[in-house]
Length: 127
Image (tube, rainbow, N blue to C red; front, side):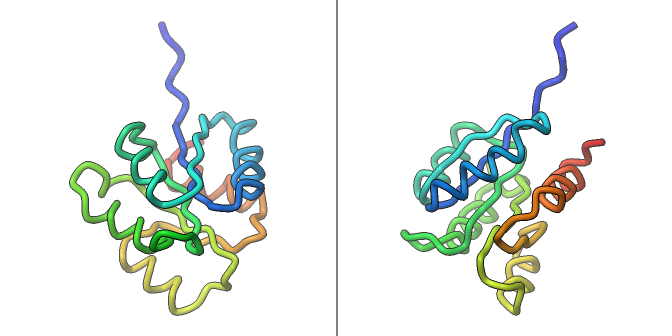
C-alpha cells in the first residue's frame, strides 16, 4: 500500500527570503512546498500543479496578491483551493475584505511558525 500523498502547498511571495523561510517551516511538518515569486508565475503554477493550499503575499508586482486571489476565486478550476494571505500590513479593513472575498485566513509577517502550522493544519483538516 502506497503512503498517503503529502499535501502540496504553493507559497507565492516576491521576497525569496520570506518564501524560503516559510517553506522551511512547512517542509519539516510533512508538506511538499512549491514556490512562485510573482502573481503571474503563481497563477500559472496553480493551474499546472493544483496545490492543496496557496499561501499568498499581498504586496507584489503585477497586480499583487489581491488580483491573484480574484483570479483564483473566479476560476472554476481553482476556486475551491484555500488561500491564506500573508502580509506585512497589520490586519485591517483590507484583511476583512479579503476574508469576505474568499481567503480563509490572514497572517501577519513576520510569520510565527506555530501559528502558521496550526492555521495550515486547520485549513487542510490535518491532525
